[in-house]
Structure formats: structure tokens, C-alpha cells
Image (tube, rainbow, N blue to C red; front, side, top):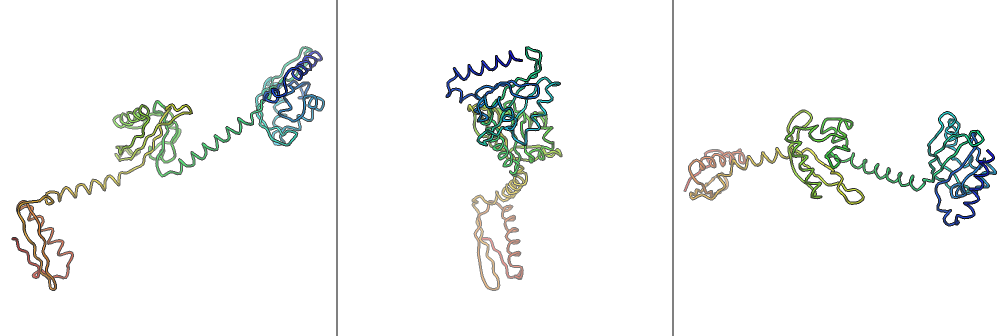
Length: 334
């Protein structure tokens, strides 16, 4: 034990003697030695960057290091040290409150071993990870905001990797596909949809990855009950920090009602289309009512078209003037 302490003390003196103070102030990894009960016997001079106390102050008063452990973490750290005799190694994180009452986050790795005299001791490496921890928390907060936004959108959202395997799906997408998130992660469209639909979906994915451009379409989709519906789809590439395309993001929503309405309008227009072309034959419709006269000139192609229009006009006049006696309405073709 004495030999180890001499070596440790010599190492500390060398660090203080030869390491320039500006360089020492940049050190964020602190090595230390302690007895089996955790009492410091040596610590690197860079400990001042963490605790605000010099190495000599920390080794001469072991309570300083113990008291510097955040009150909410102290019991957990002590339990870790006490279990070293059986575990032989430990790895954990906790908070340190320095001399100026500033809080730091550290990651500590410790090993239980026998020194040259055969006495049990602890050697440890304490890394200051405050900046990394703050960055990780900022990333987590940003991701939480992103997920909150995605989950609140009234549409289905998927994120796929470069192989079109699903990496994320919001609740709306899970409901639309009819599977929980656990059954979607890692799956491709061929695992979820008929082959003809999956082939088209993945072809579009490859086009987005290759071109780096947005993709927009209204396409067929199969609902969980097996019915064919129509969805409006937007696909966009996902880029990493280097600007490389690493996947795609897909947004889609059901537009079946809209498509049905469009088809109905198109069908109704097609029924009247033969009567909307200029024709060589003209006739004049004269309508006489109790208090007014009116006429409408209509061009028709043949007698069949004439009959259709006349029937329609009669229905229109009758519905618009329900109280008009039929004998007061007269039609003549000129």
C-alpha cells in the first residue's frame, strides 16, 4: 500500500510540475485511487476542474469528495462502491456539486483490485460529461417536440430507412394499417400489403431516394378490413447531418370520399355531354304563364336529343312553378 501511495503521489507531483495550467484546465477525465471503503488516497490534479478543490485538499479531507456527490445520488453511489467487492467493477453516472455550488454530470468507471501489498483498493476514472449530457437532453427534448407534433397531425406518418423498412409510425398510421407499432418496426410494404401495391410503394420510395425530390400522388390502398380505398400521399427524403439521404418520410390520408364525389360529378357530366355541343337544328321554347312570357333558344343535333332536353325542361318548369296550371304552358318548335 505504501508503495502504491508513493507512486501515486509522485505521479500527482509530476502532473502539477510539468502540465501547464491552461492545458490542465482542459482535462475532463480524472483518475483516482481509494481504499476499499472509498477513502481517497490519490487523485489527479485536474480534479479541481470538477470539485473546485485541489488534489491535496481532496486527499487530506476525504469528506469533501463524498459531500460533493449530489444529495439525491449519494446513496446510490455509495451502494455501487460497497458492491465492488463482489462485482469487481462498476459503471454509473451521477451529479457533482462543486465548491461554487455548480452542478456537473459525471460518468464513473471503477475497478476493485488488490494493490502490491495484497490489500484491496479501488481505482477509478471519472469523466466530466456535463456538455454531452446537456446536448443529449436537448436532442431528447427536440425529439419529444417532433413526436408530439407528428402524433397530433390528422394524418398517417411513417419513417423508413434506405431499405424501405419502417422505423417509426405514428398512432394514426398504426390505425390506418391495422397493426400496433411493435408489428410495424422493421417491416417493408411487402410484409403488409398485396404484392401489386407493395411493388408500387417501394418503387416510389426508390425514386425519392434517388432523386431527392418530393413525391405526390393519389393511389390505391388496402384498409385493414381488406377494402380498396384511395389515399393522398406525400413522400420526402430524410437526410443525415452530412446531407446524405438515409431514408424517407411518408405522409398519407384517406381521400376515398373525395374521389367518390369526383367520380359522381364526372358521371353526371358525361350524361349531359351530348346535349352541350353546338347542333345545326334550333328550336325556341315559349312559356306562357299568368303574368309573364319567356323564351329559350336551344341548339340540338337530332330528335332523340330534342326529346331528352324537352323532358328535362318540362321537369324544371314544373318544379320551379308548382302552382302554374299546365294549360298555360305552351311549347312550339321553330
